[in-house]
Image (tube, rainbow, N blue to C red; front, side):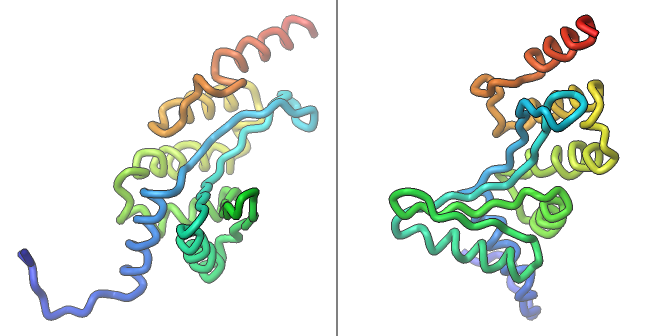
Length: 172
């Protein structure tokens, strides 16, 4: 039943963003992860990313998202994986923040993950706080608050990284 009828024509850009937010909510995921790295002073690399993987007759969803992300200058990466799977990802913080800003009014399932990334983690990364031990641990702590991030399956969680960092401090 239609409950709110107006004479206004919906904004086509908003309709597209709402559709893309639906794709993000139903098929995508925001992630934040930590990897061991010899190229950083703290010995770990902190990464944020959005990823969408589809296969079979749902590849069209990934392709539609990729086309939209390209048109919006979000610098998406597209990979064809085994068995015809297509993965689209956005990993640059500025592009990720731009995407979240555009889709945030329409996100439902991914809203809390997107908010933690946009409001907490990405600003800290922009200020390069993740490159020092305390800032890295703060970013990991925030990532562990993201509902979709299951740190129990991760090799490097807050406790593991904190232990490794304290061992590095004592060995110097």
